[in-house]
Length: 185
Ligand SMILES: C[S@@+](CC[C@H](N)C(=O)[O-])C[C@H]1O[C@@H](n2cnc3c(N)ncnc32)[C@H](O)[C@@H]1O
Image (tube, rainbow, N blue to C red; front, side, top):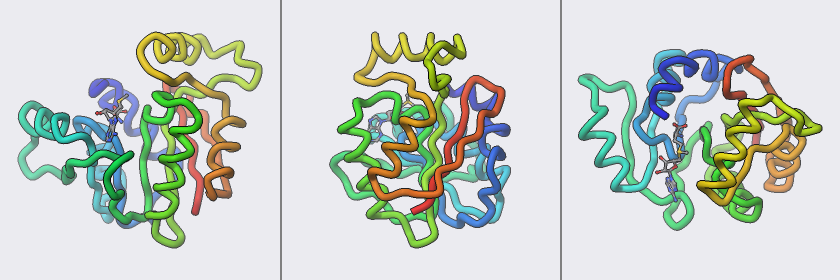
């Protein structure tokens, strides 16, 4: 998972102009690979990775960097408080969960999000008719086997985001394996 952001991370974090978001929190950011791309592309922002304690411990043991551009924070995004921020990144997170858990998480994020802030979803978007792209279909099958979630088309993300209070939903198909959706509070 780390490697996909070494390859595609730059295209993902520059799909939208994120220069206006000062404090960025990558929820479930794992090793920090995407967060580091974010910090490189938007150097005036501060970027924090929040993940489960055992994951943060392993990330710092195996993926730490000298003068790291990102901070790590341990926490559970379902049961702990979500730190206030201007932008929350959820990369390959929403696709892990059924809709009711996505709604719970996005409502929590909406409550913690600073005014003018937003949320950036990074997922492999299905076509609206779900007949492709093949990579997104394969990822969806993988989600079915390994998680409680699935890949979704843009309209489903838009509906869930609007249900949880976000608006101005913008979708960018990057042409890479993953796409981005930006919504504002
Ligand atoms: C599919 S991975 C995505 C990792 C990373 N965002 C990426 O795109 O490479 C899901 C991540 O969510 C984290 N995670 C799962 N449940 C969590 C929770 N309740 N609180 C915080 N992080 C969680 C996992 O530890 C894992 O790092």
